[in-house]
Length: 296
Image 1 (cartoon, one colour):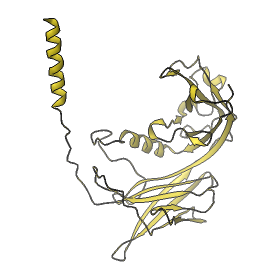
Image 2 (image 1 turned 90 degrees about the horizontal axis):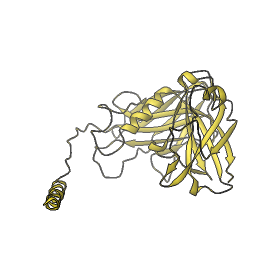
Image 3 (image 1 turned 120 degrees about the vertical axis):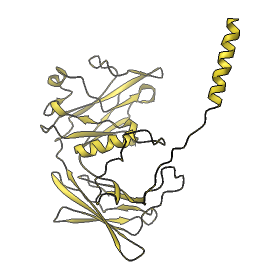
């Protein structure tokens, strides 16, 4: 009898699951705006700006790109133009150029309209100071002082990457690391990106004895042991970013996905102006880099 009741309960549960259906929430759609994803750092490289039009929440069609725009950044003295890629409409690149730390930059976007008018968007962002250098990178098998971190993943040992550097005294500076293995970025998704908000530990030597006396070590990436090979090159770029980008990043992370009920009950923040005419972010940062070779 007990067995029969278990079978009946199982089939009742299966029937309940089978009767569920997707409910599409009616999301109000506004007029299309221009989405801006632009960056300018103190790295000597071609910086990129991507322009597109916003679309409906459930849109499955290809995103419409913004072509033929005039895009440039200026510090009030020098002006750097972004030129549209002939093979990637809506993607604009500078020549090889580097911004300057501790400098405010203004991004300007001018989009011609069908009626002959020009749609003007702008944004301002500051390239903050950064540490002088990363002294070393260490890949550790196990960190006994940091037992809150997992050391096993799918029956595979985790190797954590720890940086050592003298942090800046400014508690508002936030570090965003990018980690690569053999020139392949390993934290290229929102969910894998780590941030280091120094706060009360500003001015400490990161992962040094003084910091460990009152805090746990701070890793910036991890690797599965079975995927590491002797001689693998581990590269880290440490971006110094502004607090407003830090908040934008996490609001974007929380709102990522196809469920409109996720995230905060508000639009993701933006530093593109005028309000309600553009969305996205003009990202600035200063960068220092270090590299090590993994040895088994």
